[in-house]
Image (cartoon, helix red, strand yellow):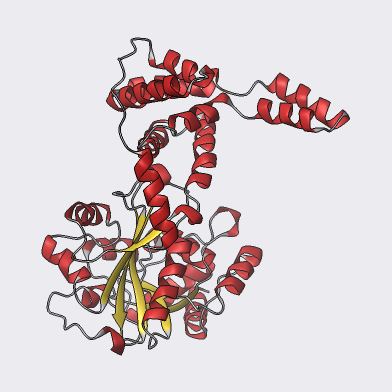
Length: 415
């Protein structure tokens, strides 16, 4: 852990020391929330925050929805006041008129969330609260607007400056390893032996971002295989009988699984920073590493091919690679971005489509989502920023000549 990370951890550890138990407050939860926003004393505010978070955690979905709806309505902005203060600021811009406009345009529920977060250990509880909001509020416009306030605050609280990168190894605490097993979202970890094969060998690495206020909860983690050359099969990477090699002999770092861990941090992006930081750290540790790639699923491939009336289940490997290339380079979602969510993530981070492989994931999941095809995205550390800017500006998918040729062959075959 860096010196900054240790200092932050110390600060948050002091924050998290429990205080004396408060006397339960019998008022309805919505009244407690109103009282917290209006409270002036720090001690009384902490007692209210503790009561609110403890009681919210015990509510059934109906009670949670009622609480969210109260925040969405009773603690919303008042448009007339916002318009009036904006008119005043426009006609007489000053510190006072700007302060009045800012106060009117920020809903009280943002201040409620801030005051709840003053309580030790509250950040994790608020992340879980937002997970409930995302789950229950979908399709309800006022609750979706409420989520913007959570997201606005979380973007500040979970910015890169607060995150601590930690290596995860077979010697890491058991409660952290259990969460790696539970949160793995790409290639399921079937047993402790399976986890051990991913963490213990000298040619395997795993890294996770943590927040000092949630020291036992990984936010996102990446699993890395150190290899010779660019791999084209996830089953080969994870084989039980594979022979590990010394890390110093590797020339390629392959990011084969990236998993977000907290549903309540959806849309708070950590992956970009994680991959770049891990690549930089590995390059500093192992001078022989020259190539940084992913071995990624293509989760939207078969769905899109079927929707376009393209047969894929009887294709040979070369045809499957061509269809995958055509899909990644040409299939678009709304707004002109790639249809494939994993492609959007890596291309937005500054990677390019590098290689395609048929029969690369022969699991039932791999066959169902992509006919077994997988893709390597290349992270060229010298060109990441340039690639990111070009993709953000033009939305054109950067690809190697090999992939571009495959995509052209598929388009010609469909013509």
